[in-house]
Length: 269
Ligand code: 13P
Ligand code: ZN
Image 1 (cartoon, rainbow, N blue to C red):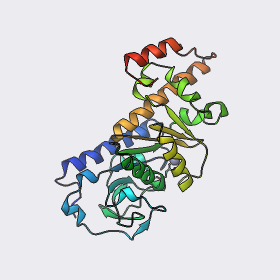
Image 2: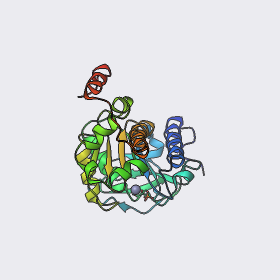
Image 3: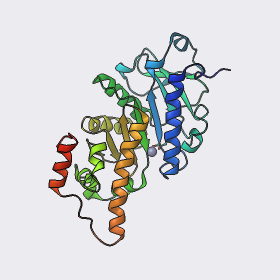
């Protein structure tokens, strides 16, 4: 049977980008076993032929009513699937889903009936939120970056914007490329609606959030950009930890240097 990606270069490009990022996540050590998940809103690439494709799965409930997702389509990593496998075989380790008209359930339409990630409630609630506010963000990424997750085991870094300021001050580019900083989300059960709700709440102020003692959840226009934001933040966390391992508390950039940086790059204060 032909793949949905055949003769659809734009859709295929989206999946290729996901596969490339999945490879990076594995190489970085952020994707042990099935750790992490990715979803991309691909509705803009959906043609009439795809709209007519039959379901290849039962109807699954989302667990919430998400009105802005009516008729939307997503590429989703499969639950229990490994990023390192998805990097090579994205259509065997992920699938395309269609949200049904009740806005509360979905079916899989291609290529294989791979059940989407267990974090689908968070991903879909976030996409619903993004569409609702007219955002051009299409991709969401959940991953387990070692140093950032380690920091969430210390109450100091769970206070609002403490980690953000520390990470921004480690290297000038961090604020330039993650200008909204890191939102903190207290521990919630993975895959729960409570986790989804807290994530949406924080995404009002941040593009990257961290789930305490678990991992990050980031959004951006495409999956490469979402990955880059997490990558620059985790690089700063590594520099901080490296300095601590050398036996000293790093100075960090001064307030004056941060201000100069913000003006030069036209960043929020
Ligand atoms: P899935 O394999 O269901 O995507 O779960 C991985 C994960 O990181 C859960 O938080
Ligand atoms: Zn996880």
